[in-house]
Amino acid sequence: MPPTQFFSHSTAAAILGVPLPSSIAGSARIHVSVRLGAQPPRARGVVGHTLAPDRIDVTSLGGLALTSAETTFALLGGMLELDDVIVAGDYLVTGEAPRGGAPAPTTMQALRDSVARHGRGRGVRTLRAALDEIRFGSLSPRETLTRLLIVRSGLPEPELNHPVFDDMGTLLALVDLAYPKRRVGIEYEGDGHREKRRFRADILRRERLEDLGWTIVRLTSDDISPDPPRRVAETLARIESRLRMRGWTP
Image (tube, rainbow, N blue to C red; front, side, top):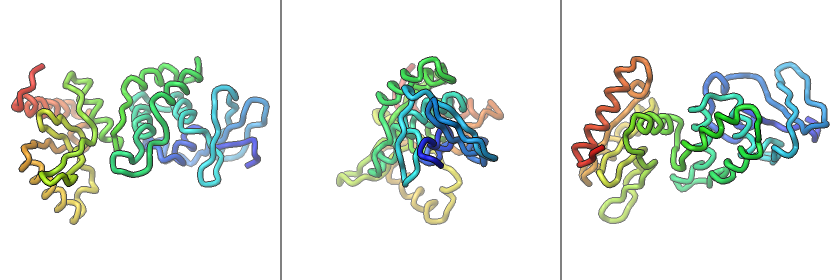
């Protein structure tokens, strides 16, 4: 790549670690952009773009030139559905911070500023809608999608990866989605939880949470899948029932 070119769109997102839908993540196409006035690439397997200089920022990561986290987010608005943009935004404002890892790649204000710079660019309506629903704290796409499902149903918004400490002040767990006042937690369990050591640790973790007065709703992908709709309704009813038992009223 000549110095006028840089990775962008979903390719930049992948380099940044942004979770992408499988239809995009599995694509072999590489997105490469140039600023207006330069020649975009033309090659097999490469999608070339020309971007307005006043709408973009370019950075580098691991020796690769790519659009910044904020610019990449704005470009994803024209490629992804609303919920997938929210998933991307949740990751970009969270990173691994709840686990004590690397700080988030960007901030909510920086995303807002980038969308404002995007003007009437492609996907701006999706971006503006996503900004209202992006939150700090999600550590996986499924956590984000579970939160959206809960909130859109009319139930109160849970906290994300809420830390729970034991009586000695030691961190016991980060509850995926939590209502601390009610001590109701929601845990999404992917296939990785079936690994032998993880499975045993999860049981002990749950028992310790219950010793502290927490009740935990455990979910899998089947519980938040829209097909069949009845399963989602059961999931939401279960969460609402736990909240009501702990004193919540609409």
